[in-house]
Length: 136
Image 1 (cartoon, rainbow, N blue to C red):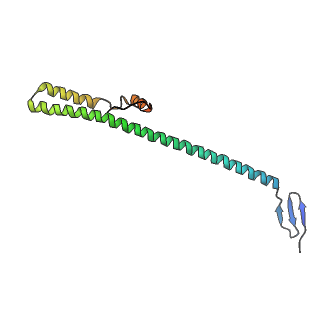
Image 2: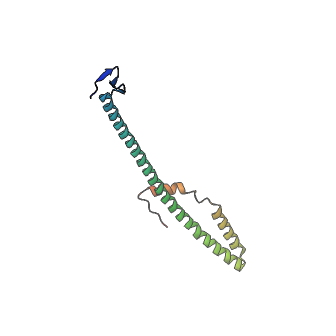
Image 3: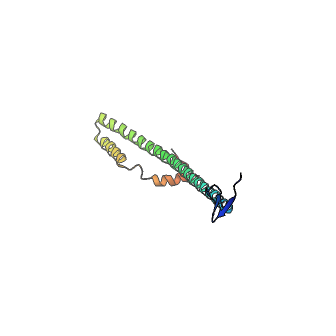
């Protein structure tokens, strides 16, 4: 029942006439090893990319906190000053004091025209300093 196999070039032929390619076991093992090495290298690259992504996201979140802290502080200052100038404005209108009216309007315009980000670079540098204390 068993049919004899005969080798013809790089193929093995069964007596039934079907041709089957021969397999070089060493080449298969070599390719499997290459594949496993490449798979490990690519896994390492992906892990490196994920680590960089996580570091960037953490940095962005830290920056977000710094920016929000800056705006909270800076706009609280502006709010307090504007409230005082508006209070002065109302008193000036009620009493008819033109000098107080001019002072209040100039103060309000000065605050509104001032760029709230002008000190941001210095603020960011200070916030990066672990010894910096933010005074409110």
